[in-house]
Figure: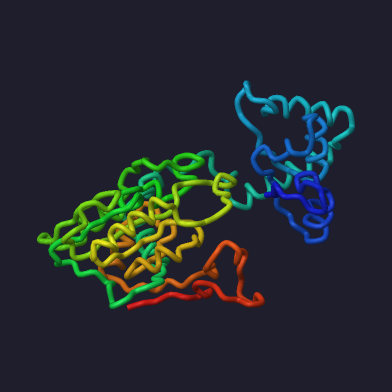
Length: 345
């Protein structure tokens, strides 16, 4: 797939040198090149000219908006491309090359040998076997960043554990963007999914009470508190931010519970490192859970000690925004947590 990016001021979807001369000819790439969504539109205002430039640059398959009411839709694309071939502006050889490349991959994948997909495989989607694999992936990906006074693992047989925070009972925050819809959904409920709160309710002993309040109220008297904070779902440019600080509302919940004197475990749901200095100092234990998806049990498996945390940071975790980007080998490398960091118990 070609990128939305530019190289030397030229959009990649119209970059014949990179797509054809380098990728296909010099490097010998024998697959097909597909565009990103509606990306050829970035090449100019005249849609027919855009099609000519992108196909001649080396695009073999183009993703374009569907729907007759949308500009630059697939019907216009087909009409203009036929005209371009008739006019000699796009050669028949270029069209044949694109078709051959697409069919070659279909044959290579065995797609031409069967007329339809195997519908029996639908029963495997969301099956117990698949969910167990996903749950195990969650366990292995958690990174324990702090654990003062051996706060973790939590005991399953204490009197009461209080859960708080926006993410404690949110499949949307666990899954992030590109779940059900492009930007994900905060309140989406997926069949068979388990939030971290629901997983905790199943994990503890029958005598242990699990309570919950999003704002942290009612925590007094609990043996432990677990606050699940982080980012709301986003995808692509909608996740661009001037700062990656944890939200004020999340910090207020953590602070409220800290003031109550109840030991507090913070679980962070995010697809990237956030600036967590304040939250880290207020917590007794801190876990980076990333985006664990539908299997909240994978988080509680580690939280309650059924499995030890084994995850290590795949990135360097910055102290502040002015450290971004930060990588191993940088001059004055001084992250909050180094690449590869991760505690266990």
